[in-house]
Image (cartoon, rainbow, N blue to C red; front, side):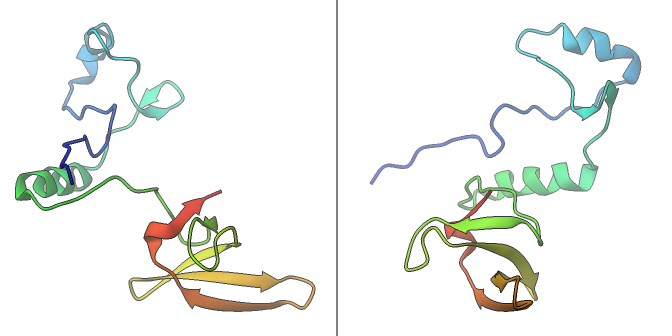
Length: 120
């Protein structure tokens, strides 16, 4: 077994920038663009950046994972249900896969490990 250090959010640099200095930031080597909507930059909430910073400072083991939202169509990657497609729901911190038969207007749900789910 080998431990390898990889960035949690590969390709992103978080920084505070005075909007008047944005053009000079965009000219810095390696900077492709600033995140935002259209041509308007949008700041990442400080609480989200601080949460990632605290995680990194804690030295706890963490790894990148897909960004999954409740209601998103997902596919099971492995196990007995590999390839099955459904809708992801979160109920009391549990991930559930909802399988539906639309013609019958019926659904069933089962708990799934978020590690084996991928977004479509």
